[in-house]
Length: 164
Image 1: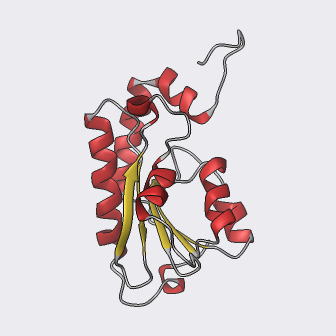
Image 2: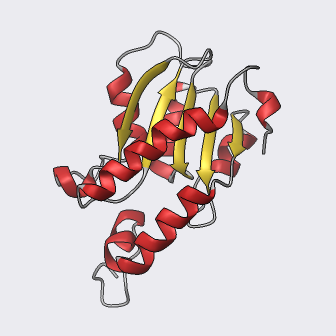
């Protein structure tokens, strides 16, 4: 994994994470899964922010990173952009990061879930894990209270073929 030194100098990563965290809190307040994300330019300019809206929009593709990506609109080049997300990106969102060549990913936490962060790092994407206690606490509490919804979100199916 990368260190914050791999990111453009002068960026306050906790400030960038604050944007994603606010999105996650909004999603939780709406009855959704508390994962937030934001896409930033290399200088820290916010391009787009979003949250997991799978429940709110009844859309299985409405993950936080894709929501932020869509909100950012078209960019000519994503190589210098920074995707900030409260939770390690799943394989779907890791694929989006790879497909469009997003250059850096800042992850709030990856204790609750590990996705494609190692794969992205192996492909040359700068990956920084902040181990943000706010993100960990919010996800841990949510998962404990909503195991079936969480398992649905990450694609875990029980032995009878139903979502756990």
